[in-house]
Length: 361
Image (cartoon, rainbow, N blue to C red; front, side):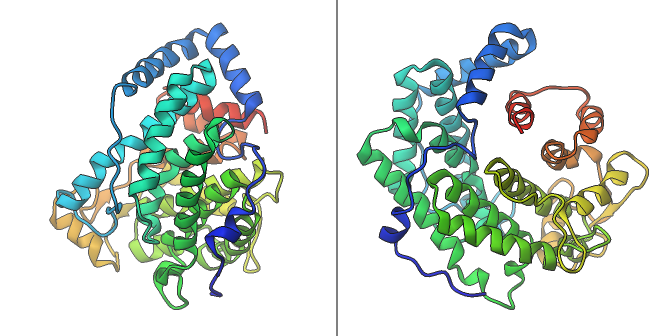
């Protein structure tokens, strides 16, 4: 794959628009405020969210220089240190959203403090399985980017730009490497796209769209299966691959780009077909024993480490597909009833936010 060479200074020239593709836009925030006021269930969920956001005002950022989750077993000290640090992601997002809901400057200031601390300390290493954890930080910045001080803005945008460039130019992208075509690449494309749309970096956006087309062609099959499913013999990885592709397809759609949910590759594969292939396993028509024929040593290592769900022969549980259903319903409203069933009719605060984006489609 052709190396993408661009300097930080050149990349920063692309930042000009304040449109919000990744997070809720101004109209969606307005609708959310009205819904909080007029809908009892939404207000109840908001009060819990509000309490958390208020508590975060009294907490300090806990940035980590290098995110390390990929390839590490549960209990590994580096993975545990990362887990504790990544609690900051949801805090940033909550502070940013609460600022947009209330216009209270103290939430903005605290969010900038968190983002600035991470921008100063965190160094991207081009590993998409690690960087995929930055989603909520990117969404937080997208929510507040037009209101923050110039100095903070420059530091945060440089951090995000460096993160995207580390992914694009990573050795893990080299032709012939499995990580250039498996779920790693799906997460890589999603991360670069989030940063591209947040910073209005047209170079990043174009690179993502071009590479998404080739990823769908290589990674997904016309019968709905995926490279990751065949390698891992696990719905877990089919889902882990589809989730970032769906997030990316939603961003492109919100930016008035092509419909990548229905887009078919030259060999007839599509995200839609791969979601629909999963449906019989979600609604109980079919069952699957996970990891029985996996070709990946790390899966066997996690089973030996007694990590839940990784023992060969573990039956696939439909609720594990919720990350896919919550996203695919954006494109296919017919999946709404299945989503309710699998989710036991529960509604979370995040589902309220997702629905706002879906209804403004």
